[in-house]
Image (cartoon, rainbow over all chains, first blue to last red; front, side):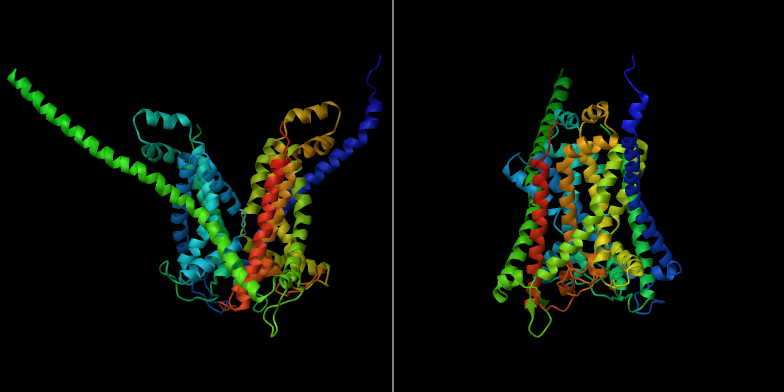
Length: 294
Length: 318
């Protein structure tokens, strides 16, 4: 007796298998689509910038003349701003994470803070710009200086850093802290000497990724009102400034008036992307090198 | 004997000193133990203060705005002319621009994102997935200003070479580019949802003779639907809040139109335009900034709450 008739099976299955394979190819193409766009985007930007990136461009001052324009001021502005953002977010982010994970009693207050953090992560960046404009620039009367921009971006990335730090702290196994308590250490000693060192690689990885988000952020800075052309280099956090993404924004907008500005924008994008690439590589390096698996 | 007791005496003094010292350092560390939680609590409060700050500033200035422009006029007006002699403040052109650009973005990101998710979760081998997924995530890490540049200098000219009626600044090109930006978000959230469907369910369908495709559409996707819908809603929220791409590539005409070849302004782009200079503090335009920002904030907040509600409420537990 024959239970399976090969001809019957292929007759009934054939169409369905073809359909399966066709759609599999379509799904694969859809996955590739994003990557193809990525390649085109990077190719376009690099091709546009060829001939414009040189030492004079990187170390030069801003100028209305496309040939003489340089972006050192914007680079310094971005670096100074990160000098504000990094310590502020690390301190607040790690502090909040320690409180939520290790001190807060499970209850209403903790739940409110936690929900609030995940809601903050979904607020559009431009709304943070308005907060910064109203509180830091106007109410505190700082003006559009580096400190105001840095604090605004700090608040923007704070939820990301908190969540990353919480996950890192949670992944430190219980037995490490129990051993520390068993030796007579106090809670803060245990946190300081055992939990934080073990969680640090995870925290740093998350913090660096958040920082690279802050570096590329433009919308809040436009709202704060960073002016288009600032010639002197910023020398501290109380100086007025421009930043790399702002420079890209202004040059792109004006490229319909002066065609060379498009190339300047592309060249600045290349510098920005290299900076982000270095930061992300550092994050991946730290994760692979120092992350302990318990 | 005498020497021994002398030694003991010395020892006794030492121990006393040690206890004294220990007590001192204990009392210092006791103080630290008490201060630290309080200090950390203050840090945690900052995130609450941020929310309070956002809501309070938006609310007070919006109320001020509605004293000058009636709330009904704001939400039903189809004309937005903040800078004219007789300024009109209707928000509908901005809401229209926001919805249309988000719709275009989702038409790109939705299908492509979910197809990529299906491929990565159901078809790709582990090796392929481990290469493709991080590469797709690079797309999510590129600053939006770079996408804005790309939309303005590459995608718009490309569209215009095919479809010449499209204007130099239009809503179509930033919509498409915004969609590309959102693909990784939808792909990776949907893939997570599909991955959490247990293998036993797939195996059941495959054992009954279903192809992989049939298994995906009749078993995996229905089971992961809450997560997939949540990823779409989050994508829409992201598109609504996106600023730089539309600001650069869609211009600043406040048209109330459904023609995607024309320039339109979104809520976010209006905020950039108005805050970028001409609005003096205290003027009606200045307050309109906050009214628009409040509308934007409420829109995105509702989307985010909806996403959380969907993924909690309709989650299938296995």
